[in-house]
Length: 140
Image (cartoon, rainbow, N blue to C red; front, side, top):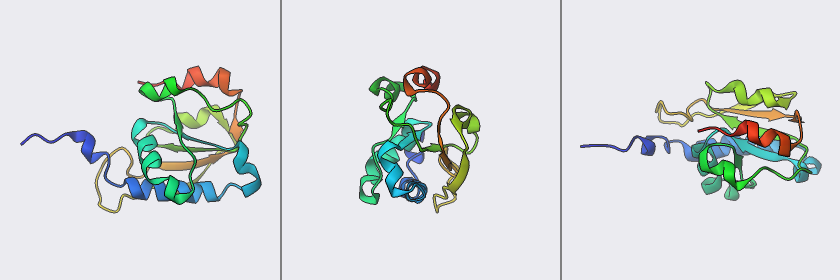
């Protein structure tokens, strides 16, 4: 029987959203109006879009595949920036300042997927304006 491997990537989505909410809560309330939630891939963005509203999370941005075409955050969204990325993709942090990990994802099932041990990283802000940075974040 064939199994769609993409379904395995959905294991732990509620846990990913909860870890992201932990990071979002680390942002002072008076800074959330200019804060951005950015994911490295569409799976992480999907998890947050599905489970995040119930946890008080804003809609995520992502430069991955078709989500890049939805556009960058507002130029007035100067930070902080909360990043969510696979454990093996720290390169995303290179575009942001003063980053530190605030949470890690444990899917609770021991399933080795892209989101298991994903990092939730809080950064002070982007290292350049979003209109300049956005093309650099495009990934396929």
